[in-house]
Length: 417
Ligand SMILES: Cc1cc2nc3c(=O)[nH]c(=O)nc-3n(C[C@H](O)[C@H](O)[C@H](O)COP(=O)(O)OP(=O)(O)OC[C@H]3O[C@@H](n4cnc5c(N)ncnc54)[C@H](O)[C@@H]3O)c2cc1C
Image 1 (cartoon, rainbow, N blue to C red):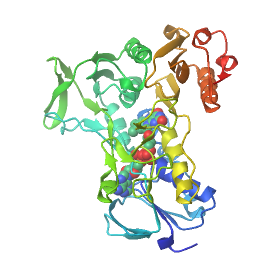
Image 2: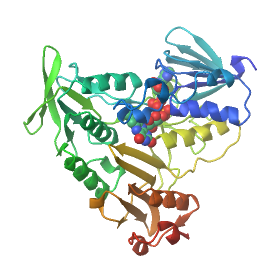
Image 3: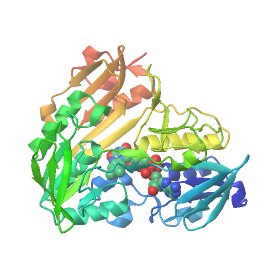
Image 4: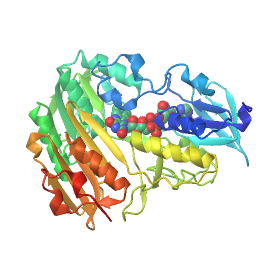
């Protein structure tokens, strides 16, 4: 094993950081690898924090992405509970300084710093019982609070907000979701899907308030007791969960003088940053759309699939194998017993085709742009999801009229472009 100075430093021990280091080893890199993560735990499955883990369906040890001995076996030095606070870059390599004073020399640098949840900027947001959800520690804390709570207000009707709402409801809480815009799940999904999830959550007893913000949070003895909405409604709250999106963590990249925009560290198709030596991957980046089908421009994707796929590309780039990141994006969200799977990106669609009846909670929405299939959003319809994902990967499309008939399997309708 070569000295650390010849090796790779990966900043961030989340999905992207771990996958990048794993891929370096798979590609035969035998240089030193150091992953530095500022959370106390080794890498874990973040998506479970709002779902099964929050509901107590897993024990803590089963959430970690690698067995304890794996890092040693792979000769990967994992540093946890210590953040990189400064990086000095030289022509080749550099040195990183951590919060605890550790100095880590490196030859190659990868940024996988993820994103931080947005805070609610209203009076009372610092009361006890007002919580964010990004880390394992926060999920443990929220789980404890939900077990003692009656009324829960979820601020933000995005994926995390709705997943938490479903979990809180399963734990016996009365749940209200308050969403500032007029629809759930933002612009990342079609209006049909957004409408379905509103009805599905309401059917299960969640109150959904759209087009309304939170103007302040009130409390007693420092603990939250109510959320006051912009329309004057006062909602009792033992817990307020803030799920209003996440901001990419770009401070280190900014300090290095890399191109950074509000949506993330700018990288190209090879996951290379503007200095053409540092790579970045995962939630901290904004990158060319990996699956454009005509839609150009930089895209910010926040998903495990993106973190994994982009970091694989980044690892190859670090080793000098320049391959483009052009994987078909995919995503899933479990909201209670409802499983949503998305293949492709529905943004910019000019036609949506519904397959099946949303009232049955088993249906798909297929999105098209300029006559080409660009995405499928599938609820309880895994065969549709698998068919579209494979079809998009092979460069195929379907005829929109034929696709509307749910009795014909989609895989039979796929045709080459
Ligand atoms: C509650 C929740 C549920 C989710 N559910 C889904 C889902 O169902 N499906 C899906 O596809 N995606 C889901 N996601 C999104 C998914 O988890 C992220 O897209 C993915 O984790 C991104 O991986 P990442 O490695 O880029 O970032 P992260 O997982 O955020 O990892 C980055 C790590 O870097 C650390 N770090 C940052 N700066 C420093 C520094 N200076 N020094 C050291 N360490 C640093 C951070 O603390 C963090 O541990 C969910 C996210 C959350 C929070």
